[in-house]
Length: 147
Length: 147
Image (cartoon, rainbow over all chains, first blue to last red; front, side, top):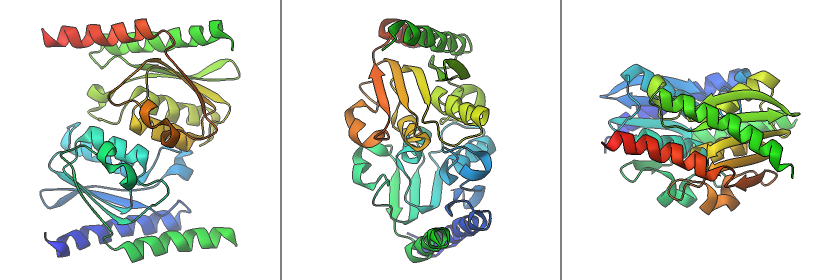
């Protein structure tokens, strides 16, 4: 595995999370990569769109499908700063995405505990990349909101 | 429970499924109801949008949130002709929708088998309403495609 490259892409996802943070959205960012190129970048838009389904991954998948004119993304990798929730892992399942790399673990709503059911059997996945930065952004966001 | 009213709304969802069928989309339809009014109608658009996440429920939820200018839909009911998949039940969770009524069961990808995790604890649900019609539309669609 080319860890440097994964880290590069996760840093791009983190930049998206930071944009979300600045816009008072829950700071989660995602990018989709195909053939060593970023084909979509997105962050959570639930507040701006008033839509609880507007997670970073959903936006990034839809944009990637548009970019490739393809429902299926078997040759793509999704980098996302937070472990995908059940909705997003279901979306990743339908997309047949080739690989998923996430940053912070989400023990409460992440797909991890039901991974045998949630992701497509052909999808590889890695968790914990840049976990500290990814988590810290979320912690800082919610800390600021609790004040 | 007012079964007649439920059946009325499910027939509206079925009309959406029939529209999908005519457009060579997998025939699943949905409506969202609030205060005895349909606030969104949608069907599967995966083919037209080239987007594996464009399920009827996702479209209907997003449109309902737009209609009410609210991320959360606790006073709404979703009627959908097929048991929601994992992605859609995750979306229903985030929306905090008040009630879900579905037609045909989906033993393979439906949320039913993991219901304790998938839906929001405050969401009521009912399955099997107009199951025969809902299933038959799907069977007919896939039968025609296999020829």
